[in-house]
Length: 296
Image (cartoon, rainbow, N blue to C red; front, side):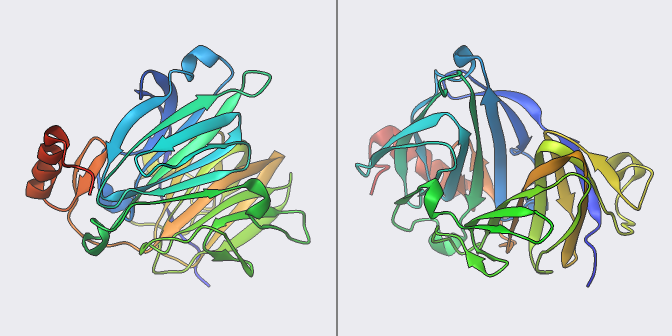
């Protein structure tokens, strides 16, 4: 077994999206090769309704999949396929935009006014950019949860992990998307297939993530201690190649998303909500949007 080196650790940064939703962006709109086949991860949370209730009114997507995972509050969804629904705590919405879809997502807080969720964008390969759009809504009770002997809990949203398979029918990226909670003081090693790109996003507690030797990483990126890094809330960890990730939970335990997928190694042409392979495809998409021929 080989421990994955930590390539980079960064803090999510404030961003304003939709009609005025305050969120934190873990990555996105930068160098896509580091996270291939993933494009963006947003962490939207807060207890001030004015920061999120304006929501994400009707807008288009093409060439990607958007994955919304809610931890608190609700998100109302509607789209051009005629789908309408509401996802709440523990639920997942997985939308394959494919050739084109127009949708809206409107968050609401729980009775205490709290809202928390994540949105991940997964790319589609050139062969599936223009596939038929599809919408999947998965309730919390459908998502398998595995508890290990030491109390570590893993919710399997997508892919197969520890013998459990998530309910989402995934794309060509073959993603594995899990929500991991490691109890205080426990050390846990989690397998990640070597051929996958992988990242973790810490959103509760803190932990020390073990770090193998990584010649390409600078000390400012991974810290002076090659044996491990104390990593806390709203921190993104990009891993290099290996087949396992190890974390030592802190005094309050640690909770994080661990996401991996098979990279496409394809060119990316990206503007706003549309992601294609070439600038010509991108121009065509926006021309169709303006001409009213975007939806197939």
